[in-house]
Length: 285
Image (cartoon, rainbow, N blue to C red; front, top):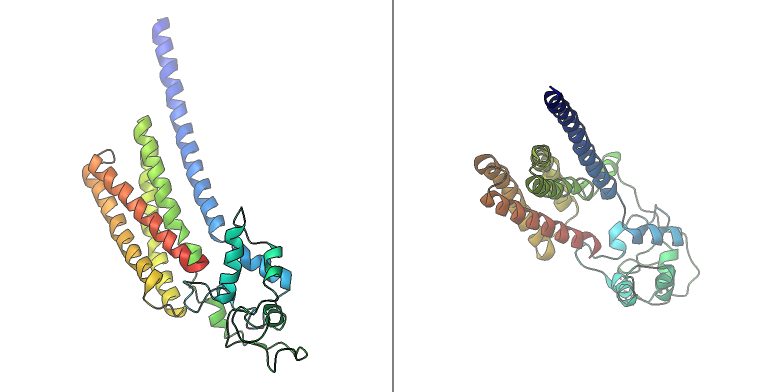
């Protein structure tokens, strides 16, 4: 009789713990997605430091240059000013841009247009673009900063990056977290983790319905040429999309513990990560 009571209590305890674990796993999943969303909206630290230190006027060419402050038109490689700063960053032990580095290149003429970097910056011009410099001759008294039209209301709502840097982090985070949950679920023989992994993978693929159009918008609006880093990124992105679909199909047909499925899952995760890497090169160089 006591044995039967003990067995009943054990079953009751197990039954109450399972829903609690399920809630815990779902909470962890939600926090991971929330964290990835907050990280994806972080701005490049350089721009924040640069604009804050020089008090850049947003109505000038420099104020609206964004990544073009240090990168060429296509945004895949650095302009002369960006290269001068990059040399200093590479020589630093932590690889972080500092105010001292900005000061070190102020008296240089990075783009060779005859104007010092500091003179161009103070007058709202691009220190890395030889075709954009203050009016007059070097050494002339500073003139009023050149204002640049902010464009239409529609153009302000749809930036040249098409919001791609914001939304692209969702499929990356969801898929990689799905891989982690899948592996943990198999090792622990936990079906709840397996279910969470499946939903992550589905969410990653579903989010591409927004990511792909934003990527096309960034390509067209940003004036990127289909060459170099941009071409590699595009090829990898198409491959990642195809592999994500293959992953879900394989999971449904073979099961989430099959070696064939796990191979496709890991391969896709690698391609997704490499695609993100090349996307980062287009922003940070």
